[in-house]
Length: 275
Image (cartoon, rainbow, N blue to C red; front, side, top):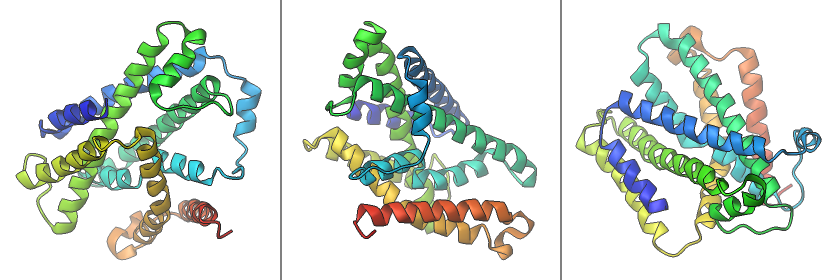
């Protein structure tokens, strides 16, 4: 399914129209959210156990999984993509309020979807149960959800795969063209060449026989490891008065930012058995 997702993602990116691609993203994300949230509700999780799970803790030997979860929830390259797409959608200071609302709503949506996936996975695969691919999860849920489980999950996984296959190449294209000072035109050959190269790399690696889950875990773990560097970079930029003037970070934003930076650094050190 991975290569099919990349082919579809490449076809959609060829449209080269930001507004059209934005609408496609919204539709896919809504479909994905409904699929996973509906599944999490139907499996009837233990609410008390869920509440206990909100207490932060990192059991022994799970640092890699925790970092990977953070890496897949707050993907570093999407921070640059967000910066680029904001400039596509809004012009000038008058768009700041709407932009902030958009970011907060998106983050809340990501939180709900992430929790839904974790809840569904916990019900489908109790501690000690193995999982080789997402299809296993759908089959495991059939006794609970019935025969339609695989269809609901397939739709959700397909939507998630398409959005991911579009996001990474698009973010790379925006970041690379910005660094090199090229025009950030989605229809330019340079822009298209960059995202096409990223998709091609994905196709090559997926065809080399590696386990899809191992590749996903490795990539998200790498995202989690470099997140502290990205967070530090953003904290420095967002406190640069010469660049932002009155729009610099407020004190509470800096406090939250440094707490996030500290947590990500501690998790990274823990993963390397330094602490």
